[in-house]
Length: 335
Image (tube, rainbow, N blue to C red; front, side, top):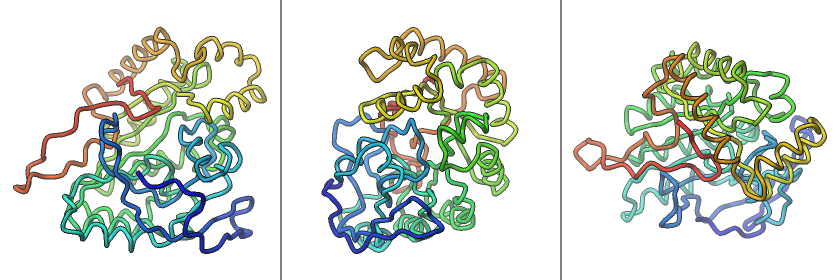
């Protein structure tokens, strides 16, 4: 994985009125193609993260602790101090051109969102997509960002060159709750429209319905509303699972919960104990409810989204053997 050095290669730090409260730290990267450590449970071996930190500001984001490796904090700094690898596309193209590169699948959106608001300013993704497709490298993208729509023509073309797997992260339809807990993201309604646009363009679009929040988005009413809207939008599959509270995220989320829903703090402490996962009984119960609503809305048997569907080929055009299915870190899928 990439070296986590404090702002190595810093060129300048920028604050602008149109991105109020956010500082962009522009860096030149020596490498952007990151190898996942061997033995990892990740369902992919390589990643690219053009941004560090994320102005989507999702209170529950499992990547928060990674910002502390850059000597920022996992709370407000994660939301407002965004590191931008301004030469990401150029460096990636050079790395992919090396004779040693074997065209393994590359996953984007595994740590922070590649289509967060910063992408509107820096437009790194078109060059990254072109570099991957031109080199014959399959890739997957997971995002909450509706800016992805800008690149639909480019993604359609890329899909004629290599396997492309697209996923939208959407785990609630309650607009008011979304504004509170993921305040920098496009609304649920906007993301549903993006799913429909991708499907209308002939592109597959799975959904990562994570995290489901205990006592906030796990009721039958909330789950039925979510799966109803995902089916209407044309999602090709749904992967869903419960909130994961790893260190760094746990403190920030529990602080938010104490301010917004103090009546739930004790329940969460009992449900999660000293660990990062909800109790086994809760996860088993939630799995049953998700299975029920997936069946009700026609998603039984669908693969959802987990960065597994963009497969490299064996040279003949046939997909190579897939890595064994396994949960994304901090996002234990139930179905």
